[in-house]
Length: 305
Ligand code: RIB
Image (cartoon, rainbow, N blue to C red):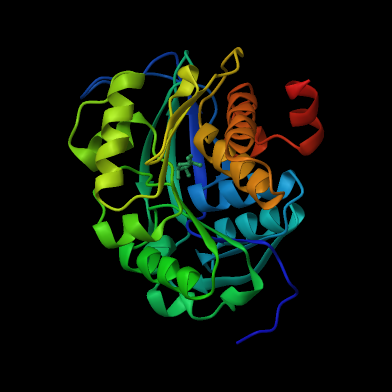
């Protein structure tokens, strides 16, 4: 097991090369439309969250897999230039994961994932990092669920707090729900997790309570332009959104998680940490692309003033 300096945040998750085309609208089934030039942009929910927290000043390490290809080099170099420790990222015979993304004229996106090496991140890989060096673990669902579960278990064994972002949307075993200190879905993910319709703040609150019934400790629902909702057994607290001109919503949720995680590691209150997450998410929507849109500390401070 390699020796590492004490670092605060560990992200176990995905790295993708995002293949992005901006188009006036999404094509319908069987339809061909023209868009702008294809751009290759560093992405993947895990890597985005790692970079988001690192740009704010957190000490971040990432565990995952990329291929032995040019995309793999590209993603590793990009993480390193954002001061993310990459020593737990392995090179796999499978290709680096990709996300094929269309961004429409309103800044909304549709994404098709090709997991590649992300699908090979195993429960055994998780044993490779010394969890005792970290205080916070960030998890998403673009790697195998058994790996996510093992990482959460190890975090529990070593006293780390666990943030689980259940994205992309899928159902979860109660065992995993109960291992997360903070479960952070958006409305779509919350709806899929609970089988309940989530259309507004009251329905989000009802669904969040259902997750508490499945063992969740604190549920934070990101509501996009409606802000965020913090729900635990004792209370429900709404945090307002920030108004911005949206260019591209890609990675806004990841920016929220990075900002929230960094604020938690700085011992801010839960409500302040969620407010910082909202600010980071809002700022990320004002720029194009996943990682290029993630704000640095100074931008967030200026925005919050
Ligand atoms: O959350 C945004 C990310 O989702 C993109 O960067 C893409 O890689 C997909 O994983």
